Structures are given as structure tokens and as C-alpha cells.
Image (cartoon, rainbow over all chains, first blue to last red):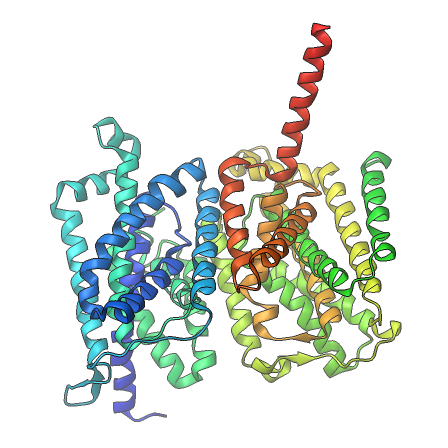
Length: 290
Length: 327
């Protein structure tokens, strides 16, 4: 058995990672909740955003946290365009097609990045990369604490946007009743694209928060996307609080799994949770009844 | 199922079987064997995904199980290679039945089914990456001893012919499926599961049958892979790549058509190699082409290349009929 402080440290680190997972899952769950599709390109888009952070740092020396100001709007527009001009028209409205089109997009993005950057593992140097915060019981890495705070903030902003603005109201209307929404004059295609854009923008933020303490390879998104799917399924497809809590749970499970089972087998806990939730309670912890 | 159904398959198989006599290049034969392995895996995917409409993202679970069973039985139990090959196919089928029983019984459809198959495949990969039986991350090596009794041959042509035979068996099985009552149930289920159920189709049983057959065929591709390359590791056997290859080929070739997977695999790998020739060995560039092709096919040719060919043929016929009418 492990000493309590080791377990506590593992739990705290799990929560820090879990918040970033939650942020990645947030975009996925938002898109699912409104468009009722699984965006398989989510992981590849995250990888693209991480490379964008890397390039901005290497060519302009831009700090990753400041890069949020550039990348969030850029990725919003990219996501908007992808849904409006590629995924929407190419899928002819069939769910299976959307799944496959987004799979195709993920293959294209991932391998284009591989062709451009090769498979080397890269990371960026920032002066605060190895700073830590002493919280009395243990030391926590500063960039990861910032990422934790940032993720919670984005979740709160997204929630406020959906609850308080007219666009947010339109998004919720489309999510609930697509036909009704279009009857009262909401441009459904536009709302779809906005939602997809928001999902992609939150990925860009996640990438900026991740990069100071993480590395990037063309395949890094795969590791996150399966975790994000698990979180979305666990929290309930389409539920924002679900994604947040699901993310934190998965972060802790992964961390404790790694502690008790070793790194390699530790990941299995996530998939076992994923499979069990799908088999036993596909609506997740917070999802509406299907 | 009649002579008319089997004849084209046998003729095409016979013509393809002549290739090694005209081609001496090992690189080309290598390409053909590899493409055949993919085509067989894709033929398996097509049974469940193309005819049954159940899109799986985790066919590597069956491919890998077939491959590992073949290798492990030979390496650790000293089983004869041919017997191991048969048992490998059986193992793949059983894994298919088990995954199907769990997921279909829970009523998972559409995206949920795609995700759970992906998760199962990942579980298999992680386990294979950890336990000593599979050689963990180092992988497993089948001892090289090129004798026919060991299912190992000096010539690549032999593997090509064996792959071809498996492909033809899978093709005939697919044709038989198309003509059978079971196949009709399967297509009915794809078109509208609730309606099929209402009309008295035992949808759960049909789906279980389909996933078992599908897994057996894809498992056979895995067995052939193991015998041909004599080496496996978790990312080869249970990697996402084979799940993607298995679904790309039928979609590009023509979903739910007997020849779709073969045509798709040949087109994709032909194009992939052509791209590598044109732009040099840039990693990932062939897959970029695959991805673009996938999106284009779904956007503009939902029935795949086979469907496209039918459309062109119908239009030509119309035109000749029109000009004949005008004359």
C-alpha cells in the first residue's frame, strides 16, 4: 500500500489533468448536444492547435498563454468553416456519414501534420515550465495549476454564454428541437457551425493551456480523444456539468490507475469505465433519458 | 446462389492468379499480398458494416486476435501452423461474438456502437502491450522455417495464391450471404431496424451472426498477416490503422457490395503508392490521400466506386438506347 500523502498527491495531480481533459471533452459534448454527432476529428484538431502554439512560440516567441488571444478566434473560424462548408454538405444529413467524414478529416489533419513536422516529439521552453506551487502537503506544477484554473474558467464562460446570450439561447433551442427552432426563424445551419466553432475554439484554449507542461506529436490527439469520448459518455452526452465532473473523475482514475497498476495497464481503467457506462448506463451520469 | 453468382468470382480469381507468372518483382508481389490482406480484412468489415449497417471502429480486435492466436499457438504451444491458422480464425470469430453479445444486447447502435468497438480494441491493445504471453511491447516472433508444413514459403507468390484463395472464399461467402434469407434480414435491419423487428426479424440474432462472420473473415486476414510477416506487436495487431483500413476500403469501393472491399483496397493502396512515388517518401502522405478520398466518396459518390461504375454504365446504356431510337 502507498502512504496517504502519495495517494493524495496522485489524486491532486489527477484533478489537474482531469480539468484539461474536461476542457477537451467540453467541446466534444457541446457539439454532440447540439448536432447530435460524434466529432471524430476532435483529437486531430487538438493536435493541430498544439502545433499552432508550437509554431507561434518558435517563430514569434509568443507566450502560449497569450497565444489564446490569437488561436481561439482562428480556430473558431476554422471550426465554423469546417462544419458549414465541409462536414455539413458532405454528410447529406446522415449520422453515419458525419461520423465517417469527421474520421476522414482526422486522418487528413493528423497525417498532414505528420508529413509537415515528422513524428518527433516536441515541446516548448517557457521560463515557468518547471516552476511549482507549494500547497503545504505537496508541490504542484505551476503550468498545470494554471491549466486547471483556465479550464474551469472556460467551462464557466461557455456555460454563461449558453445561458445568458441570444446566440446561446438559439443554440439551446436547436439542441432541443431543430424543426421548431427553424420555424421561429433561427438559421439552423449557422447555429450548427457556431457550435462547432465554439467546440474547436475551446480546443485551441486547451492546447494553449497544455503546451507549457506537455509535448506534441502528430498522434498526440489520439490519446486525448479516447479519453474525451469516455468523459462525454460518462458525464452524459451533451451535458456541460457532466463533462466537467466526468473529466475530473477520469483524471483521478487515470492517476490512481497508474499508481496501482503501472503506466501501461493503468490506462485500461478508463476504457473499462467507458465500456461499462456504455453497456449499463448509456445516458451517463447527467444525461437526459434517451 | 447459382453458377451465375460464382462464375465471375472464379474467373476474376483465375485471372488474378496468373499475375505472379508475369511479375517477377518482389516489391510488386509484396504490395499485392499486403493489399490482399487488407482486402480480406475489409471484406469482413463489409459484412457487418456494409450489409448490416453497423459501423465498427474496432475491427483490429478481430484482426489482432486472429494474428496473435496464430502466433502464440505456434510459439508457445508448438501447434502446427495450419492448425493454428484455423484456430486463429475461430478465436477471431469468438471475440466477435463476445463483443457483439455485450454491445448488441445492451442495444447500442450507430455512433455508440462505433465507440464501444473502438474501446474494446484499445483494451485488447493495452492488454497485449502488458502481458508476457503476447511478448508485451517487444512483440512476438514466429520462428523462420520456410517449409510448406509450417505455412511458410520461400516465394511470395505462394502467399499471394493463398491470400487469393481466402479472398475468393470470402467473396463467395459474401455472395451467398446476399442471396440468403439471413442476408435479406441483415439488409432489412440496416435500412430500418425498428421496421425489421416489427416484421418479426430476430434482429439480435441476425446482428450476432453478422458480427461473428465478419470477425472470422477479418481474423483470417490477421492470421495471414502473422504467417507472412512472422512478427507482431500490439500496435500492428491491435492498432487503429487496421480498423481504419478495414472500413476505408469498402466505403471507397462500394458499401454492401461483394467486390467493393477488393476494389477499394486496390484503389486506395494503388493511389497511396502512386503518391509516394510522385512526392517521395514523406510519412503520412498516402494517408492524407486516403482521408481526402474518404471525404470525397461520402460527399459525391455515396455508393462508392462500384456504384459510380453502375451509374456510368446505366448512362451509357441510356445514351445508346437514345441514339438507337433516333436512328
